[in-house]
Amino acid sequence: MSEKRKDNRGRILRTGESQRKDGTYQYRYADIFGTRRYIYDANLNKLREKEKDVQKQLDQGLDYANGKMTVVGLYEQYVSTKRNTRENTKKSYAYFAKMLHNDTFGRKEILKVKTLDVKKWLIKLHDSGLSYGTLNTLKVVVGGAFKMACEENIILKNPCAFPLSSIISNDANKKEVLSLEQQKEFLSFVRDDAWGSKCYDIIVVLLNTGMRIGELSGLTIDDVDFERRRIKIDHQLQYYDKKGYTVEKAKSKSGNRVIPMSDDVYDSLKRLLKKRNQIEREFDDYVFLNRNGRPIRSTTFSNSLRQIRKRYNEIHQDNPLPNITPHSFRHMFCSNMVNAKMNAKMLQYIMGHADISVTLNVYSHIDYDTVEKSMLDILNVKN
Image (cartoon, rainbow, N blue to C red):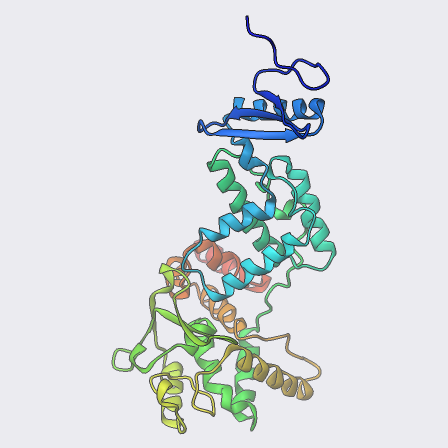
């Protein structure tokens, strides 16, 4: 019978245990894939506590070694698998990575992360000033990383598998839309205002097509079919400080669509093409150009809208307008179509939404008067 291995204090070492020359204890084991692994500790009793954790993970079919990975390490591995991401998405990934590097939660071992830890972390970030929308995006990405860890048998349960609304109320400002009367009054003001009139046709097109501002900026002459009165959408044009103008694919496959052209949109597009003067050769195919002959940018147009709203509210102090962004017109368009009882699936197509719930729950703003009229119209006809 072979003699039991002992440490330098005469204690019997178990199978897989050994003591190195520097006095450190090590334990050798095979992971779930059969790969030889080691764990170490200067204290034999503490090493044996780790051995219990290893055995527990092995019994559950989990990868203990990778379970020692930190949250930020897992996050970065997950993000590295993402390809063909948009520039804005890349910026968000980098922003979240920096956040995790600077937070104790990010340095936590993923095997030790519980659902309560995630909830406390998100509540702390919310208390520090992060918006509900930002937190929800962060939770989705970090949750995706933990889901990957589950699929790789590193952990058993995704600690992010809970709705954010269960711990934080959605304080995101709901997009305010103008009523039809307000829209008409606003358009009339913009058309007749010496400063705002330069944006009139842009607003008309946004309000009557539901296009995203990036889709409008990227619209080319070839995308506009005046004969059949159709507008083809299959890309967006974005501007980034370091890269300049960048053509990107539609937001999703559903974003590729053809939008019918109303009379107002037809007239506005004709006027815009007729008014083009100074045009940079690089951008001579684009429809919506600024005074320098370059495609309009979201930030510049947003600034113009702020000025127009300010001028409008100075005159209409008794009934001022809420904040208006380029995206507000997309919300207004969808609401107008819902209120006019457009078929929901058709509207989903026009909006370019992959999920109809987004069309109906996020973009349609229906007030009580509209609901009341619709219900009574149905009941009165029935009776």
